Image 1 (tube, rainbow, N blue to C red):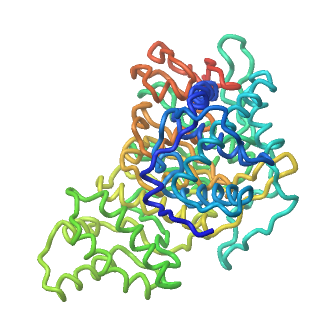
Image 2: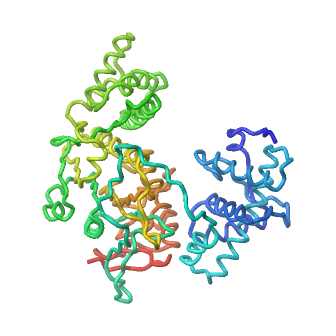
Image 3: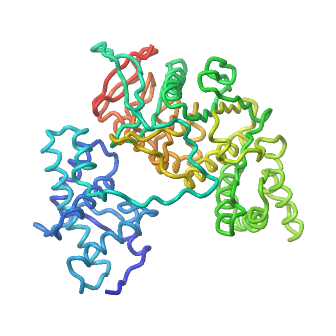
Length: 507
């Protein structure tokens, strides 16, 4: 039947389980350690739509409402609505789809789905790992084989690490039992990414490097290590040898990467590359650009990005200059910012992404201006994300361990997290299937607080050393409850084993 729906209407509308389902959702949210209500809602919808029947409602009393934009997500809303409408029409082909029908379907599926999740939880004796395994292996009905989208020619997967295998790192020993604390990085059912937090001198950087070297030793996968602090890692010869890495001290040695590789393929890729650059560029401006300035950036750069290969910042500067002169425009924040960025060469388009990301690099910015550091880091993360989007999935072994193909490690990540850059979020949320492991080291859990992308929801191993930060919501969500990190001694961290807090002596 025809539909009477728009995406905007759905994003702004309220959706909810019934009252009993809403209460049970809050209970399951706490049990699973989820920070937001919409996550349990999505789990419940998926769980219920996997059943071979359409759900009934035991009670129509509405529960806690959520806007469609939160429940479905602005980027995933079309997928969720498509699944729901397909499910509705499967059981009632003659129904006319409108907002009320969709809201009713959500209420039914959410209410039933969260009851089924609670039954699953009880059936595995409230064991978190068994619960996740059940959802993945027993509840997900997957085909025996799928047709994999071929990788774009010339963009072969960067992995040189051979067959996939479990990668187990040693962090230290548990303080109470003295038993070794190890962690399976590429296990099934949780993300491979790690966050290491702690004040100066607590041991966070030392721990990150220890883990990084273990991953490199076991996989031989290339490492991209960004030192956004004082640049001391550039002087660590032992680290360089362990990672087989080339050191780049920007801007003395520019990053030899074609940041906009492939933008000249067609107008769509050119437009995407321009918007990606504009987003990074605007985040380093001293003041927020206006709508007309944003338009000037896009219009001036589209011809360049659609026609030229190996674009440099100088090419961008010349293009913007010519556009402003041709249109009689006065100099403004756009021109002054691009002039500042061209004082020193921060990248040169020497290597394609395939060649660059198949090698290990230690990149520091101790002598770079803040704007240069931020734009270079943002463009590098953009290039990595775009490269991985073009790459095929990393292979998995019979037990589901996915090959690690690239490790991205960022030391002193506070300023980068503050930029809320889309590419960092994409690399953390989207590219684990491509074999990417991300490690973030920063001084405080506050660095993650209030971020729209909620990076810590995608962290498989949190490690927190001494910090004076109170047990805020970020820490409580991460460690499943309140705890005190201020009293931790140097070399002692708090982490999780089987969803429970443990203290570990790292050194």
